[in-house]
Length: 328
Image (cartoon, rainbow, N blue to C red):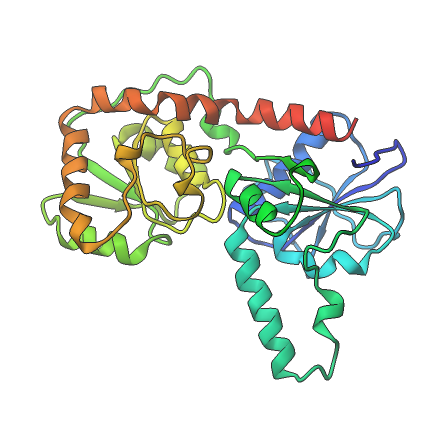
């Protein structure tokens, strides 16, 4: 259990200038801790850069720190992409926040290849890396159910795993918003950075449908687009609980997804199985048929996404309560 004192510093490690789900979660953590009146909260960007905080995150309160003492009082929040730093601070309490299991595996493989390439001239990689050893001052946060499964598969006891999920941008959580759909707006939204091959196949096989990529837009523009649309399609890898899936359901979009990563788990993507597909060429007609069914009867289908929407709308409150429990 984390030992928090009034003199403790909470230091959140983060890559600089990145605008993706993981860095946003890390900035949200800073902001929420300040809202809960924890004053010694700092962002530590690795590597350090000028203007390291992306402008997209100006809505989140942060304070940057460049140097700090390795002290048993300090609590370091380290994303899974930076586990090579675990052993650099032996005295501090350390939390690994598993925001993306796949990203961890990609970066770990890269660092091991780099080690082999330089034939250990500069450092011995195994001395720096964290390999799920049973260290007394290392704690685990799982952002998704899938992350918790991954940790348990690596012999981390369930009792040592806290479930800490971020929440979508507050812009999407306006409780006074009234969403009015235009049922004639039969466009399909998708993220062009995810599931590229699958989406390309679907587009090729549906020349009569209009597919709109969500790109080069700020949060307000994405929200407006989703609020007008009936359907969001996602066949990405989804290493954690995906932000855009959650944003889309907050704006009453129906969802069709793959079964990759966290999407395979109902606990992470709480939509009925009829809207999830193991993608293959043979499944394309069934996927396109489901798209047409949603367009033909959106009012009936959207009711099947009510559970997931309620979970998403409540995530910020759950996040807050979990932080109060951890840092008591």
